View 1 (cartoon, rainbow, N blue to C red):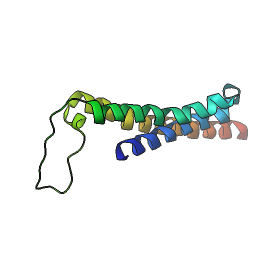
View 2: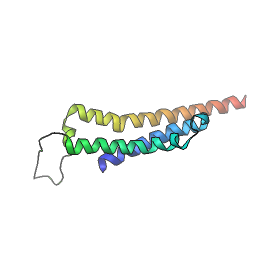
View 3: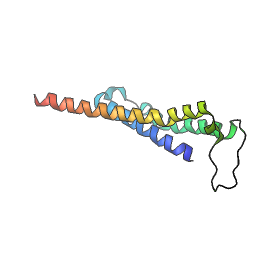
View 4: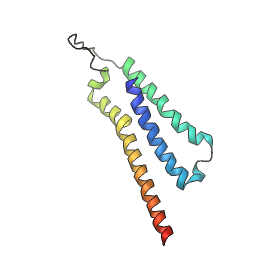
Length: 118
């Protein structure tokens, strides 16, 4: 569940930032419920499939350390390529999208406020 909850929350926050920008400045682009709710439900579903395949079907040799209380994690985390792709898709992209669209929204609001004062 830990592998699924953080990326799902990050993607939902990124989608909410994008949709908030669209609702404020381009409302005509979001004229149906499908365009509003489908992006919210899609990332948790796709991430569930992604992590289910990686955790249960990724071929690896288990490494057990009986001196530790907790296990190290899923086997795919030891593969550099897969773990990098996982980090980029589940952490980096949603955080960057959230920051970009929030800054874009803030700059656009400041610009509109400045334009209205003149």
